[in-house]
Length: 479
Image (spheres, rainbow, N blue to C red):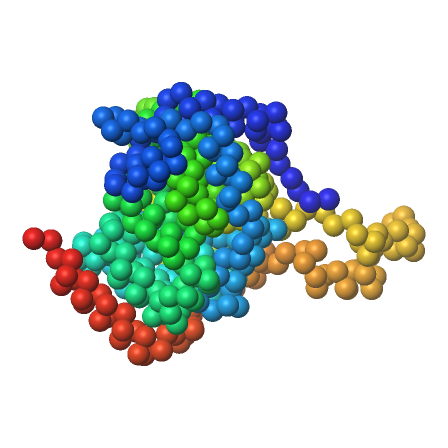
């Protein structure tokens, strides 16, 4: 009896699909850049050069969905972390490219740095349910024209799990390919391993970024998977109703699938989303709200409607500092997608609407993920859980403490025991120094950062990456 959720009925999923097809065929979608228009025209699809838009007929969408892999193995630098998709349960990704960090030593809110990426990824490496790394902050101390490359290679160096990141321009592509090939042992290994992927967000509403899309189409020659993540916000970049925002997000996702599959049929893709809503009182973007959780769960259902591997933003909060608001909002925005069966939920470690990295929050969020996993697993009614004989033997007025089944099940995953949440009696809690969730998380961060780096890259590979970055910094220097 697994815990399940249904946000969209089968009929409503068909309705969202039909509305998305109508958007693509009647409204169209804008493609900036050089390569996408060429791909569209090569396949006989009209593209209006003045408006830069194309209208995508339903049969083109259907063909693209047909060639998109329904399952594949998401690789990792350390094959121990390879994960066949669909996964059968939710795993988690660290959130990416926040602007700010809450300094772990001083508590100062400041711009993120390369060191923040290094340390946060070392923490993430130790989190059991965390299997998708991402550079969690924008490294403000790296030159802007090579910043994405620096972040990509930092992620690969300090975490051996699957890594995803972004690239901003086509001139960065050769350096990325060279660096990832060095890490994995050659271009053939890069093509075959799926150890690294790209995250791609269409520009809502109904627009594709030119430089980034051109770069990602080029990287299709190396078969890098793409996580496509539309991000329309109800009331600003998306329509005000949740239903219409879902249809718009789904249309943007389908258009992304079309262009990548036209260019490279069979390229692995992950259907994802990261929606939000506007605060109609202030105009602020809100991510830690129930509507975001509902849309994440509903779009997870749409990804499964197409039989695709899925991911969603989750674990999101608008709180400005760690505390009760963060925990409430993160649970609220994670549980719908987790129960809907999203393969990945992206969002560990950040607050302030995904703009503030907090080391302790990584550990707290992982605990929330474990709690969601236990809830999603539901009630096991297997034969070994049918304990009528115990009930018969104890009878009215007795107790079950001495039952051998009690002793056995107390040490299984029938019951989840948190090492972070305090359940001790009041007197014990006082003796322990009144610990709370975040003080225990902080101690865990200190412990993890004191440990040696896990799965380090060989020294010659690290040196090679630094040479690639130095060359890119010289050769890509803006005039």
